[in-house]
Length: 264
Image 1 (cartoon, one colour):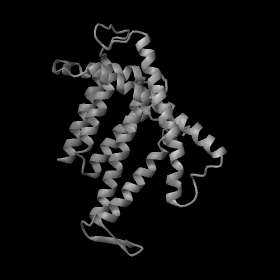
Image 2 (image 1 turned 60 degrees about the vertical axis):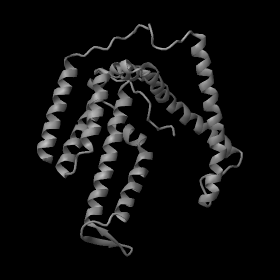
Image 3 (image 1 turned 180 degrees about the vertical axis):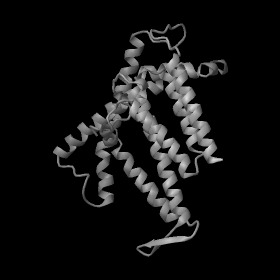
Image 4 (image 1 turned 120 degrees about the vertical axis):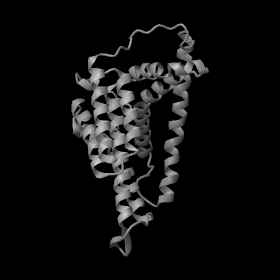
């Protein structure tokens, strides 16, 4: 849990860190849309190169990212195995313990696993290189046109910022509770699956109670400071696009054109 990196911000003096947060969010948004249209090996290779280049430009150590994505590897592995077992498309390539593995199953398992990994990698780079306050300002700025539809843009951005901010806090709280319960003799790592599921309840109940208590304290603190929403509030940090942001957009457009030339 100490290496869980979702929601954390790592300060660095890199190109990715200095980009406007709106640029980074729009790049990730377009990347998510594009990756769902990929169906060839070369297409995934182009998207993987873009993700690797973004990771290298962020100056965040690869070991730190791979260590923090350990929980994701289990999900990707389970997804890969399920597609191999459940998909029955194409010719049979080989058998594993008497179970036939089809060509379509292998291709689909690789595609879905690669897609899932690249999505998580790009969103992780976004959170690692962007402070939660900057993400809030970017979301509010990008959703500003929806104010005409009476959408509570400021409140939605604030909720997203608070959620990202408290993910590491809740993970640390979970770690403390698990150690406290283990010191009292609770064993949730061995035994039958049914017994281990029951042993998780003493972890979840205190975690939810602490989370609700923390949310109530935060609401009281905001009310005590006169928080009234986004109406009439000024910005301490004004977001402005710079030359490097336009260059990143141009590079993304070139990548998209190259991707679709390869795909279609």
